[in-house]
Image 1 (cartoon, one colour):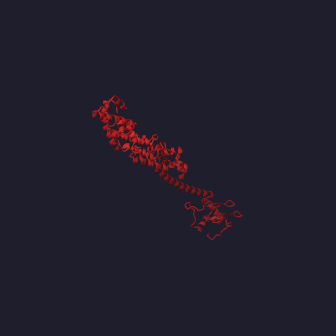
Image 2: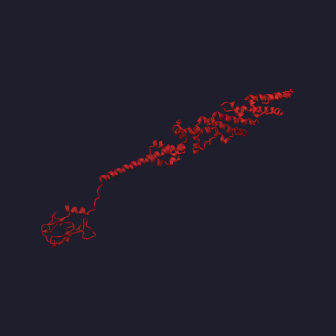
Image 3: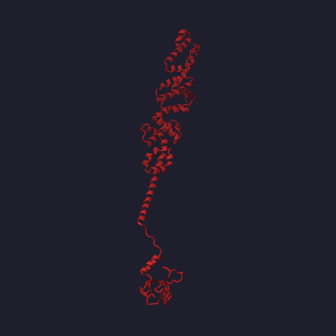
Length: 402
């Protein structure tokens, strides 16, 4: 049967007399698959009905070519256009390729993924740079922990974020001094870098004076607040703070009981409150220098058993002008004043008059004319008594009592 042509016309044969199964098996023994265990790759065998109602099975390898005018079936080999269409219909559907819209969607998705990756990289870079900057500032932990949210809100432009950071409460607390200066319209300190340098100078002043922890522990909000007071509330420059702190440090360094007693008696202060006192902007630098000198001189006088008042101590401090008093240079005069006091007290007691340690010291240092006159009068009468000459009369007592 292999020699059949493309149009094998069986119209001259009686279909019912032909054993088509045997014919097909003989023609194509390798492909014949009558059993269901070997499926037909195209489909099952087909029953064909002729015009007179007879039926027959179209063998494997053939297909029906329709009916001829006489109503008999025409078989033709597999492979014709009709068979190809039949096989195409029976074969699994081949998925169609992506449409133009699908392709564009895939392109858009890829572009979006690239942009998201680029944005993520920029976000990470901005976060790393800003975190480093804020750690250098100190006290900005609240902002550092919120950086991811701030970047989502403000974007990843570092300059934009730095411009907006002053709006945060963390910044306002950390840079209270700078914020207050800006509110007052003071622009001497223009940015965070300059303010940080100012903080460093203030810390150095107290560290050099041996008062490292007066402002608070380095890097703490307590210290930031203390410096903010110096900057904005007190408006005291670094140089003036240095002078004031050095004055306080002189008193603190001399912690003798005599100096502490003078400090307490003269000004109602102790060492713990002294520095805060001298930093008060209401008090001028000259006043602070006088306070320090007076407390030290009062202590020096006490070491010579002289109890002078604050007015006398401040008058003595005035001898040093705006310079630090050299307490050692005063000590000899204190000692001489003590001897003079002891000598004049005897006559003062006899005359039932009074003379204070302050008057004795004022006379010894030549800083009060009235005290000088009073002491000289007592000295003169004392000499006269020991010389045997009466230098004492009711009139002389009256003239020298004051």
